[in-house]
Image (cartoon, rainbow, N blue to C red; front, side, top):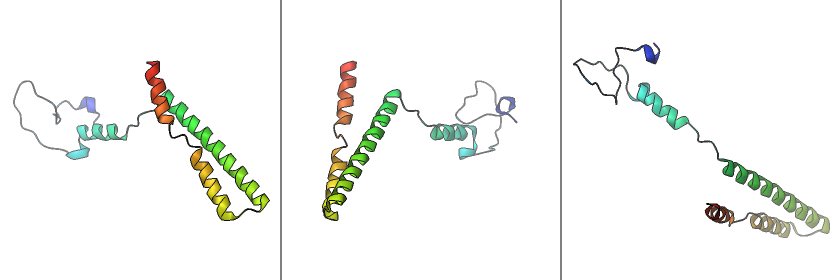
Length: 115
């Protein structure tokens, strides 16, 4: 039966204001209504805020730019006949250096100044 039509049921975590009765357990754990609600709450995902969406977009742009620069450097290194190990070290150095370590700090400071 739908939940609203169950007139003779008492659920865990609820209170009875008046009267007496005998109860029979019909479900336990996640099969109860309270367990179903807990499962729905656990499965719910919190949506990103507009700020988080913009920071994710910025991270994608920075990653794309970093990959493009690394590809150019590798291409130039191969065209000049450089050693593969040296090209690899340079590419790794460039890719690590393009990720701004201070971005979370800058965002926090800007938000604090804005408030």
